Length: 430
Image (cartoon, rainbow, N blue to C red; front, top):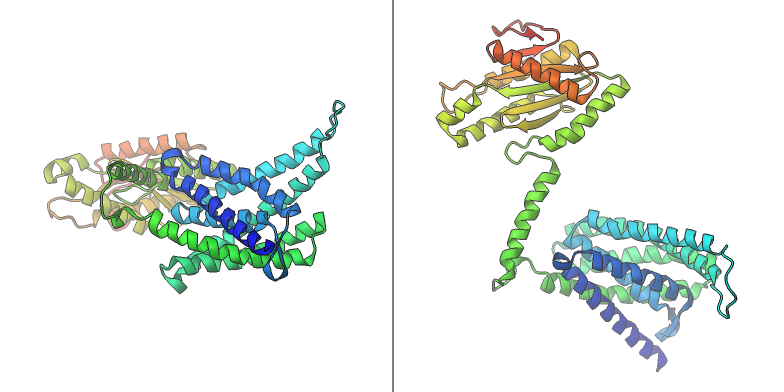
C-alpha cells in the first residue's frame, strides 16, 4: 500500500534526522556547536526545496511534504532541545545565521543572473533560485517568531506539567507548528500556488511528526543527557567535565559583571558601563557625579582581625553604600577596599550631600570589635564642572580622595564643601 509505505518512510526519515542531529548536539562539549549549526543550515535548503515541490500521499487522503513534515518539524524540536540544554542566546545564533544566509542567497542569485554564460545544454534556473530564496527568507522570518513563542511556551508549561518533559514538548510543538503551518502556507501559496489540501494535509502530518519528535526528545533529555548526579557510576571523563563546569562557572561570574564577594558591579563593568555613562552625560550636557570611596585603614584591620573579618567589612560597606545611594545609582567595586558610585543627573551640592550620607551611614555601621571603628574617605568629581571625560573625571576624584586621606580620613572632598550641621567631620574643598 503506497500510503502506508510513505508513512513508514517519513518515520524512518525522522529517526535518521533526529539521531544524527542529536548526536552532534550531544557532542557539542567536545567538538563545539559549529557542527550542529552547519548541519541545520545544510538541511535548511533541502527542507525548503522539498516543501515547495515534493508531496506524498498518506492514508485518509492526506497530502504532505517530507521537507515540511520531517525536516522543518525536526529543526524546530532540535532548537527547543538546544534551548533546554543551553540558553536562548545560543538558540538565536543559527536563526540569525540562516536569515542572513538566505538574504545573501537571494541577493547573489539576483546579481548572478546578469552574467552572460557560455553556451551550454544546461542553463542556471535563476527563477527557481529566486523562488527558493524568497521562501527561505520567509520561512526563517517565521522561524524567528516560532522560537520566541516556543521558548516562552516551554517555560510557561512548567507551571502546568512540572518536570514532565513529554507533555511540555508535545504541547509546544502542537501550538507553534499550527501557527507555522498557517504562516508558511501563505508564502507558499503566493509563490507556488499550493492549494488548500497542502495546508490541511501538512498540518495533520506535522502533528504526527510532533508526536514522534516529542517521544524522541523526551528519551534524549531523560536518558542521553542525564545530569552528572543521576549517573550511578563515575566515568573518568567526568573529572574533566567537572573541571569544565567549574571553568564555565568562573567565566559566568566574570560575564555577569558582579563582584563575587560583595555583590557590587565589578571593575570590568565600570570600564564598560561606567565609562559609557560618563560619555553619554557629557554629550547630553547632563550632570553626573563620580564618587571614589576608600575604606580607612583597611590593611591594618585585615592584619589585626584576619581576612574573614575583612571580607565581612567589605560586604557591610557595600550594603551601606547601596542602601544609601539612589535606586538609579550604580555601585562598583574598583578593587581591594575601593568603591565607585556613579550618580547620573547629580552635581554640586547634591553630589556632596550624597557622599556625606554614605560616609555617615558607614561610620555608624557596627563592627564585631567595638574598638574597630569603620570609616571611609570619599573623593567627589562632577562631569561638566570638573571634567568632560571618564579618565579625567576619575583622576579628579582620585586626587580628592587622597586629599581627604591626607586631611585625616573619614571625610568627603569635593569642589564645593558643604559642612554637615550635625557632624564634627569637616568637608575639605578640592
